[in-house]
Amino acid sequence: MHKLFRHIVFAFAAATLALAGCSKQALPGQDGAEIDFSASAVRLETATKSGASLVEGTQFDVDDEIQVSAWHHRKTELVFVNETVKKTAADAWSYSPKKKWRWEDSDYYDFFAFYAAPAGPGVTATPANGEPFSLSVDYDATELQYDLMMAGTRHKISDSNPSRVVDLNFQHMLSAVKVIFYKYIGGEAVVITSYHFMDLVVSADVQGFWDDGYKRFDSRLTNTLRLDTELFGEDRISPWGDPDNYLRDSTTPYDPGFFDLLLPQDLDPDSGAPSLVVRYMDETDKDPDDGIFLPSEYTSERIPLKNIPVKGTTDQFITRWEPGHKYIYEVHILFNGGVLVNVVSTEWDEVPAQTPGLMI
Image (cartoon, rainbow, N blue to C red; front, side, top):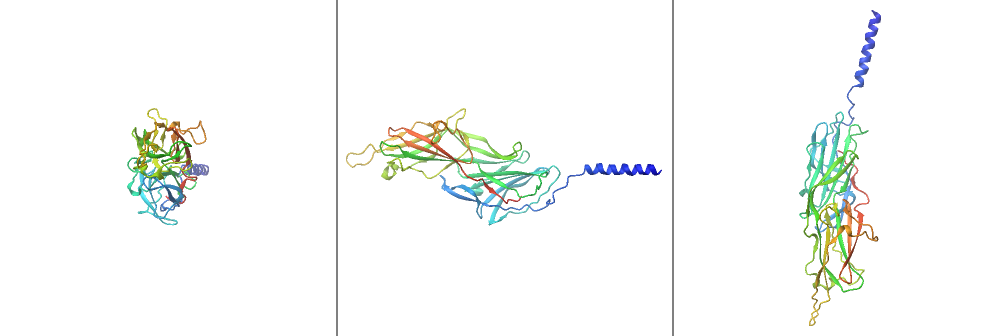
């Protein structure tokens, strides 16, 4: 009888250990804590065609606002939907009502945010109400140009500290494009009357998503629209009326003073050829009586962007505009009336803009 009792005790202990091995995963100690925000700023500088500024640097300013959307995997619900989070002081962000972490087993949260300067609240995003989670902003460069930035990250319960501060590294979703004009050595003085681009993708849904394969935030374009008409650039109003507008030497360029903010795109697509068209006048024709200039306007051949070499090279070409890059096309008007073009490409920011203390 004593031997039988001892066997029953051993069996009970073994069952207890087995159950302990199958117990629920311990939830983080910060479960139920409020979701708070803290961030640094992004400064604005460099003019755009709309008179606004490109976002450059790594800082947010007081009164800047970001729009946050978030998806909770285990609850299968949107936690935030374009929640406006505003920087109210040097290290303080505010939103209402407050939300809390609600962790469960095998859980994760996806966080996506966007920042549109200077469009502000005039721009909204569409978060996917389900999985895979994504965030889309409709960008139409022909309607309104603004600096669109997006960020995203994922926190998993299996992380060492899933309720840690969420660092959102904002990335520029667009390409900034400028054209500067020079008069080549020799030839008559010329004045630029207009320049435009053709065969560009002008509108699309810019979609941010979590790439689970590479474990990173990424973006893509959907619902793209390409137009073969002349767009963007500049039409100058009667520039020939002012002699100061003429390019008379090779060292003083004409800089329109703005960037066009355009969608990233392939410059060597299967159909269509994204191109640059330039129009200019010279001052070879004068009225013999009063000396008034009667310039003749010239239109360049369409210049395929894929054939424009990188400055300082003859065999390197930019065949795609990448997000977060600036492209400056330098157009030289030759003495025989032709044009010579090169391009300079630089990254928009040396350091990605980020919110190093964004607690979600």
